[in-house]
Amino acid sequence: MSSLWGAQQGAKRYLSIIVTMLALSGCSSNEFEDLRAYINEVKATSKGRIEPLPEFVPVESFSYSVDDYGDPFVSWEAKAAMAARADQQSSQGGGLQPDLGRRREPLESFPLDTLRMVGTMERDGQSSALVHSPDGLVSRIVEGNYLGQNYGQVVTVSPDKIDLIEIVPDGLGSWVRRPASLAIVE
Image (cartoon, rainbow, N blue to C red; front, side, top):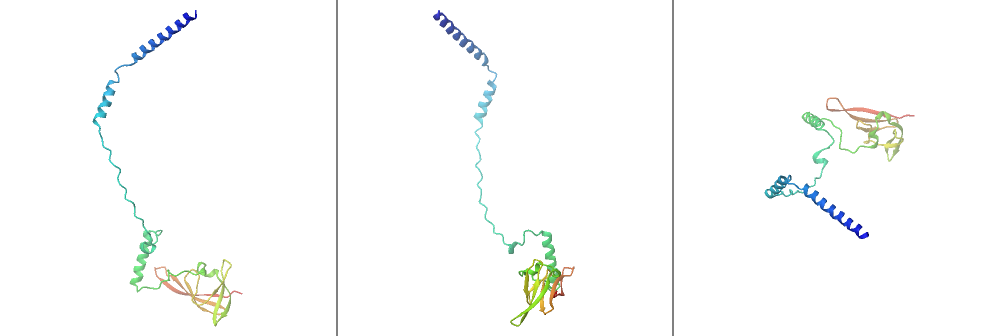
């Protein structure tokens, strides 16, 4: 009985293989033959050449110098206005101007009316004034020092006041000298 059973199983297996082969042979058709022909034609004709990548030239480094090119954060309109003022002043014989290239002193960052003269002292025959600034510091001032935001240069130091000359804009593109003083506060 077992041999009959094994024979039936072998026949079923053989029959299923034949049915599968017939089904697969039915799926093969010539409907894609034109596509295969087109692919073969394109492969045969296109023997294209790929262009090589362009050679990149290294960029030269650039050193920026403020002296040569000016301030990069100033607009061209402002530069043109400054140049026009410089031309106007040169045509007027140069005119008065503050020394903008000079290193500013610490007390020039405060308006003159916020500074207080609190005393004087004398050293080696030279009088100096003591000035209290809004940041709480007391500075010793002698003739020639600068005070305030208007380029004020100290002319004389006396026991009761400091006399200075400020250079202020006149509103027409020029500068004028203006006397000012800082009296002692008691």
